[in-house]
Amino acid sequence: MTGIGPDWRLVDGVATAWFDTPSLTEGAALAGRIVELSAEIVVDLRATGVRVRLDSDGHAEAVSAVARGLGLAANPAVPHHLSVVFETADPPAVRRFWRRVLDYAPGEGGGLADPLRRDPPIRIRQSTEPRPLRNRIHLDVVRPASAVEQARPGEASGPFGVRHTDPDGNEVDLVPGSALGERIGTADWQAVFSAMACYRVASRTQQRDLVTAAAALADDTGFPLMVDLRPGLVIIDSGKDQWEDDAHGLDLDFTDLAGRIQTAARELGAAADPKLPRFAQLFLDAADVAAVRAFWVAALGYTPDRRAGVSDIHDPRRLNPVLVFQGLDASETDRRRQRNRIHVELAVPSDLAQARLATAVAAGGRLLDVSAHRWRIADPEGNEMVISSAQTSRTR
Image 1: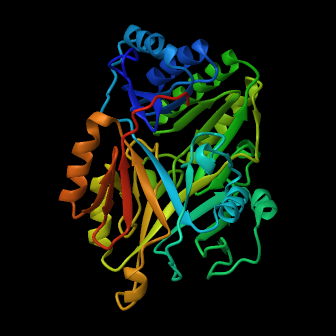
Image 2: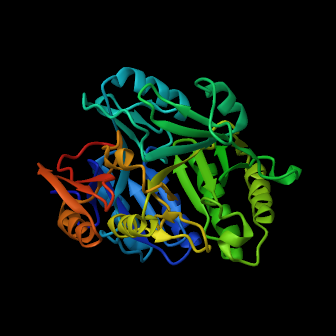
């Protein structure tokens, strides 16, 4: 970390900072200034702050200086990053399946990465341990209907006809999205559990102006919009279910806000790309949902969904994937004892690793083993997570 500065932490090897902001509008001012430094810096704007992931450590002080000039302070306790790990005897076959389903690109170490740097990376690790029974962890992936039709990796099954399995039997519900509504004014938006619009921009000025406009429109309604800046792209997202009235609890029809943002985007000359929206989440089966859910809330620093009867938990800043919990028959003892072929890995800054480990254990976790900068923990029913604290810096 020497030379990067006190605002920054290494998370999964990437120099990362979070700057608290009192509104989307003030966060957009910071985001706009950052893209002037480099179009390659990854910026995630939220109602409470801005996450910045650097393309080069050389930009760290310049970004910090911009934030200080705007009166914004870094919060080094925030950055962390979740990835999904598959253990398999046949990495090439598993990799091909998930690359098709997710439309990911090749990643480091033979894994897969979201080209948009939004959904969790997939790590694929060799393992010969026999695990023939159905996993207690699976993924949901929602993409536009045309993309799902093109990606469909075989005959679907399951109660909704959307379930597919990879060569090891790991499951994914590959769900087709739909238009947000029938209004022409929201034609740029897709409902992929989130309401999402992805706009191609021709310049950094156009990108900055669109982010500024979207932030101002959302602040006018009090809606906690998510706005992500990528090279040549602005992704505008409601968050899972947040466009539905019972989820956000505001006196607001989200489609009205979506229509106003669409109008602003088109007036600025931005062009929607309807192929890009994607939503991914994790499902965990548990015999004691309350106990397992409580562990993951604490271990990940997540927040329960506000709606009664909904088992979702989410990152309070919506920077990492949603987890959903569903009941598992306690009589399925063999399945409950089998080690999952999928687990999650939480990358945290090195100075926060011990505190995160202590929190996970206090919430009912069991420490299984320790290696260099890695702690493997099981939840109350044996679902595993790894806490890691990388020490080596790399570009994003």
